[in-house]
Image (cartoon, rainbow, N blue to C red; front, side, top):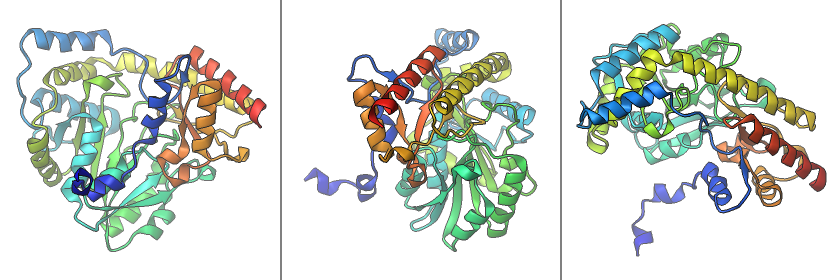
Length: 387
């Protein structure tokens, strides 16, 4: 009986491919996991202390729906200082429960039944399902290893129809580690301006780049008024469990998102908001140390895969690499299942991130060098024994 009552949109959505292997690995002994994109660093001590102090001082009541004004001011200053973005903290900044809530709010605020949302692939697992839940149609935009997994203006243009409402993308990218540099974004921005398409730009990995500076598409001429910038504290500041993100953009869009946020969330966790102020105002030295360590791990894992003969695109951002395993004749799901069963290494099949990810596996290097090296030894042994 209950099955008949379930929303058809929910029923058609597949469970997360990331969590599938994480859950299986949790039932096994001796597993080395490179599966979850979560920093292995603790939240910086001074940030934790501020969160604790806010609890001790009874800073546990609701805040304004949009978030503490002190935090919104810190966000505004941070974005201007780091990425040349200008937002009024009074009416262009919304504090959310992680960056994922911000994506959900944005899509629900703009998508009407039948609207098409472009979703570049491979990409983070939640974008397409969230578009579907909002009543839209997710349209995959393929990217390719030969293009360093970058979006191209020509491919986007070929997929735009009169029903196209928005494009959601994440650069630096999860799962590939690809980045979009300014010239790439200029060409895409021209297409999006011509067709009046909203950009929902998830920039949660903006601080995690190697040898380059992150460019936000919102910083380009004519793009701020048609772009929602989403970011958060989980990745750069090692604050995953604090569940805090933010969205910045045109006043009308922020107002619409705020309405939904008011009814389903009320406000983001108060103690997390106070801690986030400390992170933004005084946390960059720790971020720089973490980035330097991620860079060291990046070199270890990419070098390890290449040494065992796998083609491995060099990631320029985030903390993932995306080696190609298509030459072994197994689907990415079968490869990961067999690897987990025989060598107890948990990685994520590229197919979890869309059809363009088939033939690859995602490996997170947000783990210690020791864990990465052990995983590489087991993967190499697996390849030698099985293929």
